[in-house]
Amino acid sequence: MFSLALTVWEEACGAVRSLLREGSVLPGAALLTVALLVPAAGYVLATGHGVDGSVAGRPAPVPTTVVPTTSTTAPPTITTTVPETHSNAYAFTALAGNGDPVGFDPCVPLEVVYHPAGAPHVVAANEVAEATRRLSLGLQRPVGFEVDHAASGVQRIDVTWVPTWSDLPGDPNPDTVGMGGFDREGDHATHGHVTLASAGTLSAGFGPGSWGSALQHELGHAVGLAHVGDPNQEMYPTISNTRPAGWGPGDLAGLRQLGGTCRTH
Image (cartoon, rainbow, N blue to C red):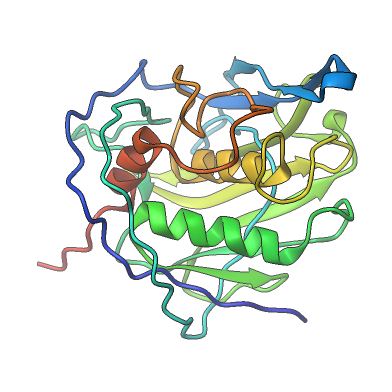
């Protein structure tokens, strides 16, 4: 069994300013689809569609691609700083009764559990681990990573693979490469899920049109982010053939709110 633990303990350097929620709160989940247009030019396009596939206690799944996993052992410190944010382009899947975004409890450990069965050969566990590291950095809270194993007493995001788009949950179409979302109880998410279609034609790594970009997008949905209309953000529902994977300033502003602060008193 392969396992990897990583944690980001870094705090953001800059204050998030001029935060403005873009768009209304989505009642369900969003769908990330990928279509190859003009193959000779290498264009990879994803289009988003609203999905109202909610069931009791669970918003409709939100799509994207690639999967991370969590860990229970003490991980090494990674020295990376969060850039000062200026964009206001972010949105949340759901809001609690007090107006705060619905996300995981900041006082309970969170981990990503990757299940590599059925994954395309271009996606390696270390890429999922890197996507987990980036998620931890954005949330500004530790996020563990495990492969095929979950610790007890933790909140988890499971990442799994299915053969084709038609095997995905929700309401996919032939261009859909993944779905992501979370279960909720009251004002907190309790379990995140990312399901990816291995037949998707994306490249390895975190460059333009990559599985890394799809994975980050989908993990954003799994922790509570919704689609936005700003193409400079990872939560834009189109995988760019020119922009590498990476959280934009608006993504980071939204993730910081979802990361929360544990208050015991």
